[in-house]
Length: 319
Image (cartoon, rainbow, N blue to C red):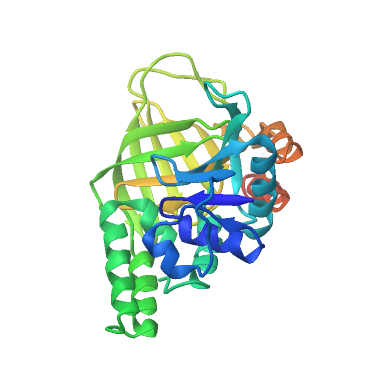
């Protein structure tokens, strides 16, 4: 199999390709410097970043895409395949699939990249997060390659910096809620009303009629929501309030470990949720979604199991 890769994950993914005996196709200048063998023959699989930088597009003939997917599942076991296989227009045998890299997958990709070149902690988290973070990573790693900085000091500095990265108090942020079906639901703008030690609370004003999903509680004019988001936690909690401040219900969305940046937070919704209408006991909903995603090979078993463990633990805490 011959693979061409472009984008922020390319070095890590090509390392995976190379160490498993496959060929690197049409490399860039920096890829030629990092890998001792390649070919200029046409690619069987082409990898490229999605626009939001948190996933890659896998493009190629079905049998080659399948082969690469199996390789990715073994080498980057926290990868989640979102959406479905899509036939490329004007081609009868070319397909595209999206591989999402939540936080744990990004850290697995960091390890692969570090086998090839200097890689600061949380490299892919930063490269995906914003242009400013990406430039900071590139600058630090260039200094390391040129021997101008000591790796131990730089690595410690990066860990310290990332541990403190949270949205500013009073700022407006977005909550990017990625679904297993490939959709990105953007919630917000939400104002940060509280923050401490990697935890933020944001406030959103609710609009529209109907009822709150999962809670079956009516929406009313003046309702608002307070969402608490904890860095690297596998759930977020949203509490809905009426205009007079009365609690209407609580919704616990179970997800991949939350990635928190200065202007947004990002995670993959794992489907299963816990709800607690005011005055009633908690219950688990939407249990079929993660199980179905696991059965068809989109969701790794260890992530599915962890999602249900988190749900059961929440039920104990809320009962």
